Image (cartoon, rainbow, N blue to C red):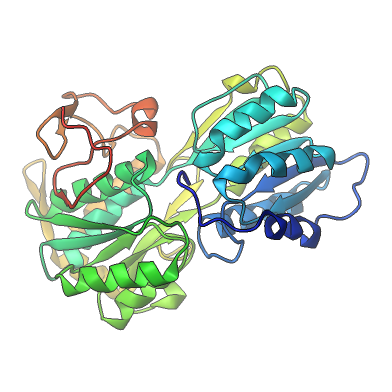
Length: 389
């Protein structure tokens, strides 16, 4: 989810990328035309890259579909891009950043005959739905593994912006780590950017210098994985396959398959299931179940084999019995993929200030996750907009 403003780029640059898109050619009259707006460049190896890979897979899978995209659109400048896409006969427009939410809603009211889908938001309209493939379950598993492989009680997290998505991901990472090591802490450094390799490298190196024994992050490049590998510190990939950037130290990570959502949604538009008038009822919230997200540093590799012996050697107590972290991670992964009862945010959970946030036996709701402002125990460092009561 992208919420804060990316460093502003000239709008002419963003619009130029439409003309340069391979799919921005003459429209075939009988095809459904779907258009995508990205917060970053398609080569960022992160969020925008993953959406664009899914766009290409979706277009390949659906012969009646035509697509185009606009990249590097600052969140305050989405409206003129939407206007341009509407004039270009886009019938469905996907706005793929949280910070586009209000402008997408305004556009939905302005263009009632166009269908809009907004990624990671919660506002809907008769012609505007929402969708998200979320990682908090995987971050919990990553946190467990991080605690198992770290040489210290201290873990590090390079974070973009203090928005609800990151707060739930960092919290899930900390909860997972503390399930293995109750003394574990997660030190967070905010870089206030979704795409800034220099800041990401500086933050990663600072965390390692301060004693972090494993790193996770939210920044749309492989910089943290590379920086950690150079210092022989294990790390967890974010959004895209990053094993190749550090084969010895990329332990696992989070992978996304947006095409699972895009193909399902556009197929239902094509067959008339979804149409203008009922999109306010459409809200994809996809987790491990369904295959929209995957645990791993690359597809098919849930855990880097080089780190399996260490995880098998690290024991934890579950239900009064000793089990290896490796076995527990795989067991929880399988349970969540099947939609079982386990969820990282099952209460009782107090925030780091001791305030009860999830009651005993309850599971946090999607609405609460989408508006999450608190962070879990074990998270250290300042967090903007954190409630004190």
